[in-house]
Length: 331
Image (cartoon, rainbow, N blue to C red; front, side):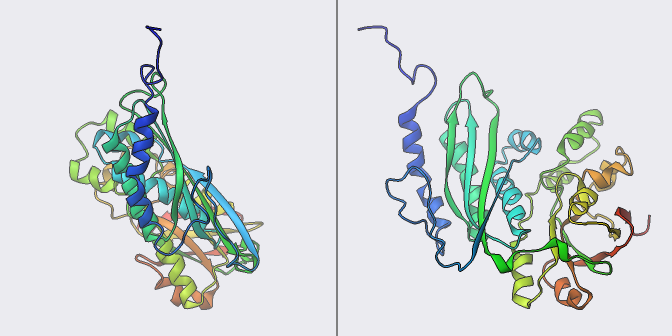
């Protein structure tokens, strides 16, 4: 009968979607050089064999790229968006002492765009390959009329595992312990609603070179965690410095105590231009301020901890007074 509608005419092409999944296989293979899925053929969910762990504890995390995504899309920086997506979830898994094992993505888009989606997946695979985490699957949702044509929705999900006895235990943090901070690579993927407002209200102040420095992908801190393990240092706690900055991400680790922090001046190009339009106190609660990762260790472990990653520096000590107070050295 003439006039019957198809799913494709409604804006969803399932055949093209199936073919696109096949195009991802080379990127998926890059993330399975050391770890492999279990019985992957014919299943509608990813499986992983945990028998190599004696007392396994699994941990999960999910996150997105936030409003940084708008600028990345405007500048066609799709690979960076994929890297940000991975780092935001994988870093959270690493804070537990766990190994990131499996990553899944959600991509919402108005109409399938092979090149755009493949570039997002490529960026994800770059970071997942680096940290030995499998790209286990995901969902590409074609949603005409719901997602605007110039927008991509992104969410990431990570599953990790650790031996129960290897889990990080923040209840062991004590007064006198040392906070070692590790440098961020950029603003990472938090605080961009404020950045975008500054850019909008003060156009032309920030150069393209400075903005490019701000937009660098979120750093993966698997190298720091791996080096700490290799050196025999067991941190009492670790924090990924995301939304809320140093105070809010660290305070969640403390019970009945706090920390006084002195951090180096953030040498990111254009940082002073940004801070000229931002409340002096609010900047500490919005941005990572150049410190993207913190490990809390005993005094004896400080020398090894400082060598665990680029930019390692002592930023403070645990004190009896509750709360986190931050100041920039020299201000």
